[in-house]
Image (tube, rainbow, N blue to C red; front, side, top):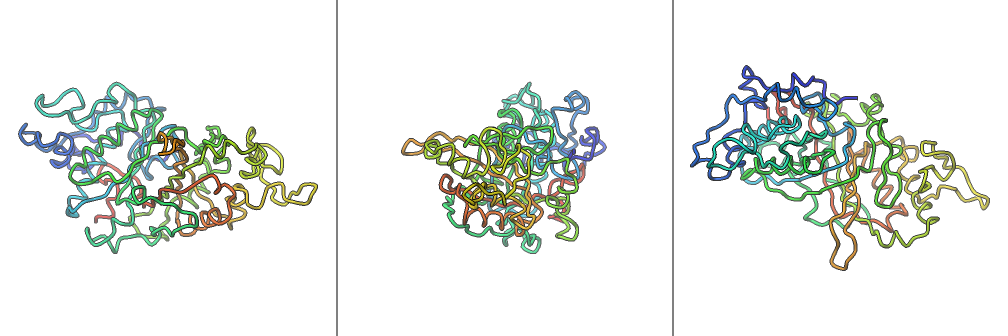
Length: 435
C-alpha cells in the first residue's frame, strides 16, 4: 500500500507553480538559516520561483524513493526502513506567520530531499562562492535510500503563543504518568517533531541536519534519537526483525496491506475532528532503556516466559509457529497457563485489550555507555494510532502495571504529536492548522 497518492511527476514544482508555498523556494528566513549571517552580506535574496528539476527526479529509481506529497504523510505505513533520526524541537518567541513560514520551508526542503536532491536550490557544491552552501553535502551522490520525512505538532504548540489553542485536537492529550515511569525532562515533549527514516543512516542524518539549519532562529532542538535496526514490520514483504533482547518484535503488528484495519485504527476520520487532522494520525514515542546486562544473565526459560514466545522461532508458548494465534487458555501439566498471565504477549494482545491495536514503528538504539559502564541501549518505541486516548493509553496502562518485562526496562523519554495529513504543491504540511 502506497501512502502517497500523487505520482512522482505531480510532486514537483514547475515555474507555473512558483507561488505555491511548497515549491516556490525557501523564504528569506530559511535561506538565512541555511547560510548563516553571511547570507545578507553575500546578497542572496529569497528564491522566489525556484522549482525542482523534473529530469533529476525522473532519474531517481522508484523503488528507492517515496513521494513527499500524498493523501497521508510518508513514514507511517511506508515499509519500515532500517535507520532513523528523530528530532523534537521547541519553538521560540516568533510570530504565527513566522511559524507558518517555517513549516512551508521545511515542506519545500523535505520534498527535495526525499527525491534525492539537496535541501536548497543550489546544493552543496554550487551557488554564491562567498556564502556557505545551502546544503551540507554529506548526502551528495547518495540515492534517497527510501527517505521519508514525517512532521508532527506537540501539545505545547497549542498554548497561547500562536493563537492555536482552539485548534488543539481533543485526542492530542498530555500523556498521563504511567506506573514505573522514570522520565527525564530532557527526553520529553517538544513543540514539533521530525521523523526521518531511510535505509542509509547518512541520508537520515542529512535530512535532520539540514532541516535544523533551515530552522535557525525559529526552532531549537530539544532532543533527538538515532535508531538502527527496525523493530517492526509495516509490510508483508518484510520479515519480523529482532530487538536488543534477541526476540522477534512486532509479530502481530498491522501491515500496510491490511487497508481496512489501517483505516480503522491509524487514520483520523472526518467524524473524529478537527478538520485539519482528517487523514492524519497521532504518534506516541517512548524511549525505553533496556538493562541489557541483567537480561543477559537470565535463563532462556525465564526470557521466554517473560516475553511469552520462543526466542528462536518467535512462536507463542501455546504452540505453533510465529504467526500462530496465541491461545491464552492452554495450560501445562500443572494447570498453569503456558503463556504466563504477566507475559508481555498476553498483556499487549488485542484480545485482552478490547480489540485495541496500534501501528508499531520502533527502532533499536545504543548510545554508548552510562556512568557505571553499562550499555545505554534500548528501544525507541513509536506507535501510530487514530486516538491515543483509546489505543495507546489503555495498552500502556496494562503493560505498566503488570508486565514481567518491566524488570528489565525503564521508560526514560516520552512524546506525543499530532501528525497532520500529507502535503501537496499548494498545501504545505499542516496547512489547515493555520487557515
